[in-house]
Image (tube, rainbow, N blue to C red; front, top):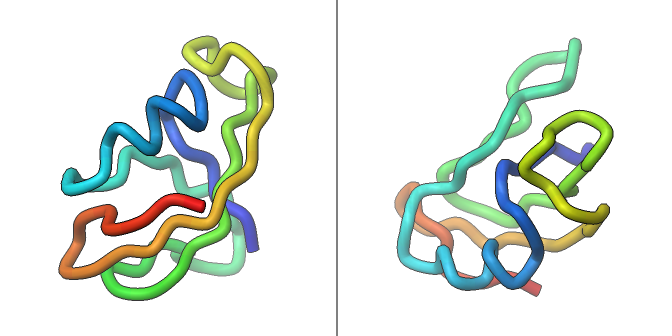
Length: 70
């Protein structure tokens, strides 16, 4: 599953390493967020006006904060 994140760009997401993830749950099948593990995320401009252009990333979470963005 891919969840939507609330960052202007992938660069802004990378700058948020060490902070909690700002996201929006979009699945009707239950929560997508995991405090520990790897999440596939997307910045979707048609859903959020703060996103300049569409981007995708894999975010590694540890103890509820972003530890890596690829």
